[in-house]
Image (cartoon, rainbow, N blue to C red; front, side, top):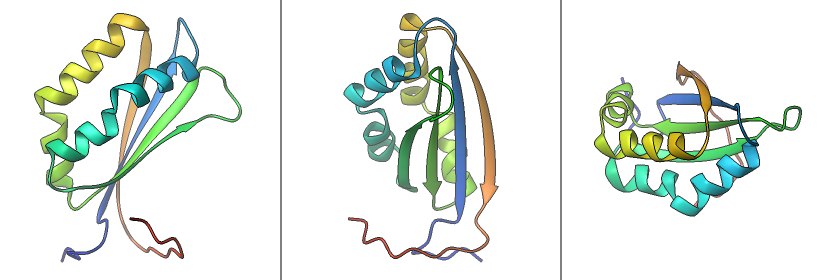
Length: 113
């Protein structure tokens, strides 16, 4: 049973930039407001964070929390997502790996607004 107030599903997109740096790709992603665009597109989007690797200048990942896996699948099929990836691919050559996770246990002391 889904908890209406919790993140029930997580997606992780790992990105390796082949002809530039992760910082360049992250700057583009941030300036475009891609995570915010996702939130505006999919009602079940609850959380997003872009993280630069502290070990590899060419790698970053995007972690997103969703109300349900169905919301994530809706995002995967979204023309907004397709356009984001197409625009990034015009600037930089990237390899990606997507992973999916069901939430099992959560605890946070953060007050996210």
